[in-house]
Amino acid sequence: MMQPTILVIDDDVQIRNLVEIYLKNEGFQVVKAGDGLEALDILSKNKVHLIILDIMMPKMDGIDACLKIREESEVPIIMLSAKVEDLHKIHGLSVGADDYITKPFNPLELVARVKSQLRRYLRCNHLHDSGISDNASRIEIGNLTINTATHQVFVNNKEVKLTPKEFAILELLARHQGMVFSSRKIYEMVWKEPMMELENTVMVHIRNIREKIEENPRKPIYLKNVWGVGYKIE
Image (spheres, rainbow, N blue to C red):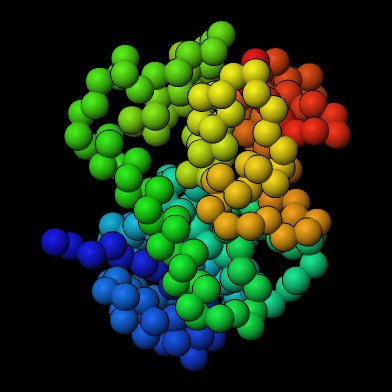
């Protein structure tokens, strides 16, 4: 059985090689790139199941690379950066990354996050390939349609592209219409780990989802705030 392929993009050859060792020890196939341009060339020729992407790189940095990748692919992206400020983290997530880890990092933690992202991504793709009935996997709320088998979202019959984490949040709220979920609860159910204090990740993802599904993100009709409590879908 073919093992998932991970693309590691970092201008530091030592980090690339270190990450490769840990990933191969877990049975993954690994391809490597030293900058965003090289990575885009690799992606045009190879099927990749997850990307580990450094932010600070020559030629094309991680932010620009992420934006280009998201034009064509919804493959999970984990960003790496030496910058620990929330602003940089939010920026990375806002351009389409699914997770973020700061340098220096524990390689075992990175591997754990890789596995977590792959589980959801590969499960969604397996459901798509298995031909599950649309009727059994469709959630309809007004003009919003969510197909949990094919991992597709439509607004007014027009498809909108969500990242795996954005889709997971939307599916969670849609399956429990009217229920209010706090940011902490959303994080723990989607990321499958405790939320750290002052975590802005959920807020950024909610904002991104609204930009894609709401006609007016400032006055959402689907994904609503319950001030001081959390978020819900009506």
